[in-house]
Length: 191
Ligand code: ATP
Ligand code: MG
Image (cartoon, rainbow, N blue to C red; front, side, top):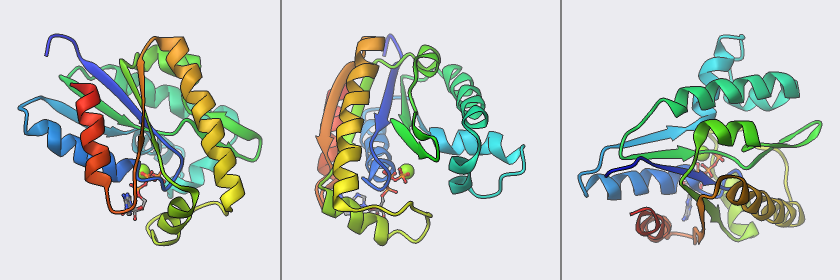
């Protein structure tokens, strides 16, 4: 591939991003592309551990300034990777005690320089069920109404990210039991 595709994949917590992105990675690998599969939160957590944070879900409780510093450090690390495809699994916003903190503010986008932006969506009830069935993570409490609002905010932040970067924008639905189909739609969008 001549130019690195920098694909930022977003969606609200528990929608199934990491599941779908892992499948996108597998599907693209079969096409002999050199791919990096990165979880923004994991790279931020590696920086947070240096500050003594021992659980990744504790990062949301840090001050906004501390979280922003961690975001910048993670984005700088990711900016140095130039494989054929860089998959970046991240969030459009983080719900903090001080409101919605954008996950892709302009300074972060300026480092990441995405070529493609993908929003993974699912029905609010499916998202609630997936969160309830995933004991590996600590989730904030939510209702169908709060998830509907989060879905709306996600779409508006997605549009802003597209306008700021000029990246192509794509929305896919991760239907129950159909993460492979969602992954295929993303792989088709990228290549
Ligand atoms: P976070 O933002 O918190 O990292 P996420 O969007 O990456 O969450 P995952 O960890 O991929 O979400 O998925 C959350 C849960 O939903 C997992 O238990 C996963 O197995 C399940 N899941 C993902 N996609 C589907 C699907 N299409 N059908 C059924 N279950 C799914
Ligand atoms: Mg995830």
